[in-house]
Length: 281
Image 1 (tube, rainbow, N blue to C red):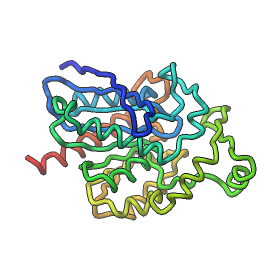
Image 2 (image 1 turned 60 degrees about the vertical axis):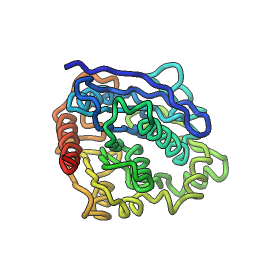
Image 3 (image 1 turned 30 degrees about the vertical axis):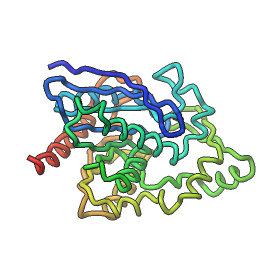
Image 4 (image 1 turned 135 degrees about the vertical axis):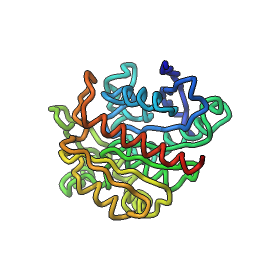
């Protein structure tokens, strides 16, 4: 059983370039499609993502991992270098990108791979984007969240004041001495669309099955954020805690080894999506 990978270039409605990789096992085709959205300072080749893609393909899915057009990836696929684009990576731009990927995966050219079932999966900030999109797009059949945020409001009062004064702020990268610039356009985009982009409110309106997976040792996105999502929509959500798991399920970038926590997250996610598919048998 060999996992194959195809690389794609997709363009969003503004003409921005999105790079993607599709993982699948030919013998399982056509198969349900899982589209994975990375988080802030993430990218499609970050750490565990290619490994997870292969595991999903081996389980009978077509797995799509992609770079948001403004995530900061340029010539080097495994390192953020385009900080100008990253500084302008708005929620609206990410939703535009995800829409383009869904459009592609729902199109004629993808029919040889897809059996018509399409699911979303998101980690951290990508979870928030996936929630908004799942509520707004009826092509999405189920949603899986890994260490998802519950709010895009992640700036202190002082940071907001600084942004208003200077037009930008610098934020520290977790577990790193590096700081990256965030331009005011990101804050303005949220304020302009704040009702639409309230993640918990959006999740409360979800009418498809959702799996919330969160580590008990996550200090980047605290466990309470997952609990807020669960409490907002207990009817359509399932909540799974991964004991002693941090934000990255106890793995690192570059990826060297899997972990018990990552394997638990993969197993729960695969079983969740397969359970959804049984309803269509």
